[in-house]
Length: 271
Image (cartoon, rainbow, N blue to C red; front, side, top):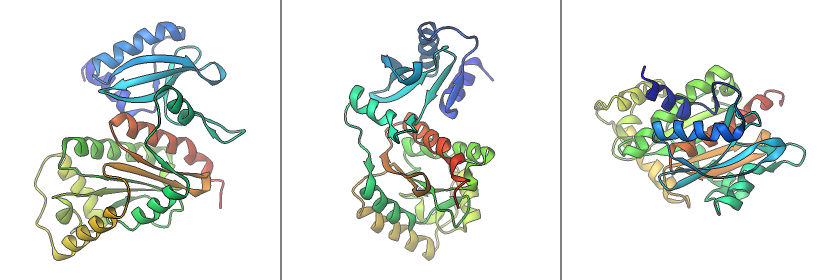
């Protein structure tokens, strides 16, 4: 594997990146800029003081911005949720509002309503069928953006399974668009296989009347939701966390999944 591809995989597939050496945060910013440039993943446009010695970073990827952090020793880049557990305050969201501007996400009762609506959508579910917590991704795999989101979500699902996160939550992927009827014509297990088929850009089997009906029903439900795909829904009542998040780039997917992975280990202690 080339060095460039290795860096790209490390940046996109990991929530925490390990830098070689223990340089100070200032020196690591130069290394981070190098990594981002090599992987065409954007650039650092601003830094700010974060909590407990973290260096806050504003990353810009083709016009879409995200918050990340460097650890005090400059060794790790953290992307995802940083919360004050004594107050329950979502610091990443607060920094986003301060340094990026209003974040276009839905929270609270509105997010819970969207989550309940999306829970009825037909797709492929990974994890326990009776999970109390879940994350749902809605996307059109026929578009370049949707294809990348599908690949990223499938990769993250594998990582979450290895970490045990899928023991306490379910992950649902809901493809929409032209291929949805054919995709939904298969069983849940068959749909997992069809995900790989779509990733390989191979044609899907013909649609059945059941698949067509399920796709039409998905479209009807989605037409009642005040958010256009692609988007993610996080509903984790055991952690007091619910949000509906438009997806503008893979960095947004990584950040949202990182937040779920952070909270999931704590859910096992809940009945």
